[in-house]
Length: 431
Image (cartoon, rainbow, N blue to C red; front, side):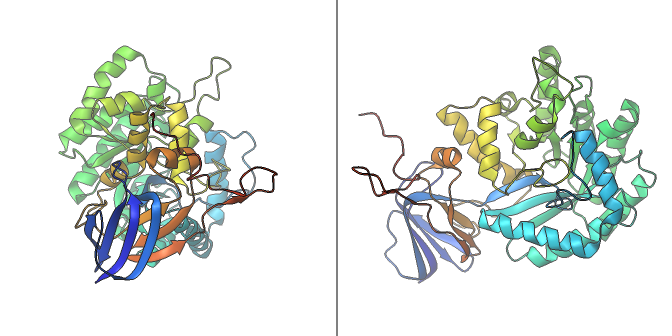
């Protein structure tokens, strides 16, 4: 007797027509045919079952604040930072909690059940930390929310940056953050990384740094981050987010840098939607698009995962909590259109991100937690093409969200009466 059986599902590794049996909050079996009954069954009808999506880089304190107190007219990173500085004194705990919970509702419907959010600690009121700690507790039954103490205005540059970050960690934030390229000088940026990695080592915490989010090829704080990671024995526990300056660096320097990053086991988190929107703003043509060297970093064995970063906030007016939208953009910008490329992109939204976040029991193997999604697509490649409907979202063996399949009804003489984009247009195998 199972709590839930998913019937006739395709799996991310290419296996087709498998049943997945869930019992007592874990995946109890994955086999071609489960000859048993369950309290509930879902017929996937040859569609994709996947572990839930993970977003290792987001700003939940700013989400859904678009237009508050005004719009970002230039659409630039710096105006976004300035606009957030205008909004921050107006923030209340109640409003922050309400917006974050609304975003989490949307995330669940999109099969996004694991989120790492940066929390701005530059305002010594720390109302952002208070609010998101409450949200973390309230959504815990259905979303794992990790919180990064993030000194948005700079660890040294903000008047009370050092003290506020440490107080936020004392309050219970999970991860040490930083933004070295936003300090007043390159040397201050270097010193901030030394201090932040030391704090993380002393407290036994992971590190996640907004690192070199700039077009400046001389912004090389990732080199310092890698060195400090090794110095403090933090290998595998450190993430470098954005890393957009690598897009502009000369190839010789990068040939030295990537092995250093691999030695430090840096987790790399590009944010395709935001990176290509905000970078290259000083260029005419040719115009740089700013996403880091995804293909080369993957080839070197680094763990690369993708973040949503923003949804309807001062930096980005779009977004929908859809990690497949992120992967879809990554395919285009990284020019990774091959079949194996796309499989790697899907992994960057799921298993790689789970590794970045240090998640335990994640996956579709027997013994993993009973968390999964069923999508209106045949496989991972089609999922990235279509950004399909999440037909079912399962947490702990229970369905927490359902959506009806997207079926188009046609009224055309001599043509089909309906179209299922996730079934009717699957590429045919060569005969």
